[in-house]
Image (cartoon, rainbow, N blue to C red; front, side, top):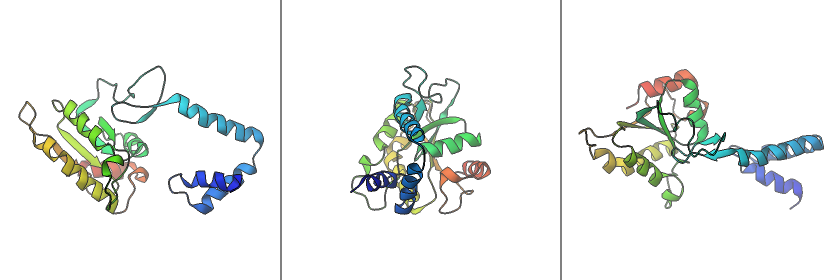
Length: 208
């Protein structure tokens, strides 16, 4: 395997990138100047140095000091009564940009394949349970916000089942934790990452 094949294999690991697109990336880079490639390499290296993962929600964020929490989790004015669970960082950013949700987030880290025997190694279900137990005094609702696809629906059902005992266990104020999912507003097969603001707003408003 030569250098072109090796680099194409790396690009194929990117989400949504196939063999043909991967090779286009390689040939694009070959057509650029050495300075362009050096700058790209430097930016990738700096990305790993300047970005950290939040210890609470597992979102990636730009470091300004030695923080362990992102700006959302460290914000004391954030609505702590709701927790919105999404698959990945780009989903969180889409919802954040819509400005229709003001609560906390949790990034699950993936979706659960319909046929899967090692589910816990694919998503952060144990971490989610721990976060809910930690915040159960203030938490009133967990919103499951996954793409409307067979895999997204399966993940929704799996997470609901995993959180059932926690949700049915009333907090000290006597109120249990509600678990809801995005409602009408998202079309079947829609990726949450690519949904517009109005679609996200309607999906959150009509959650059930």
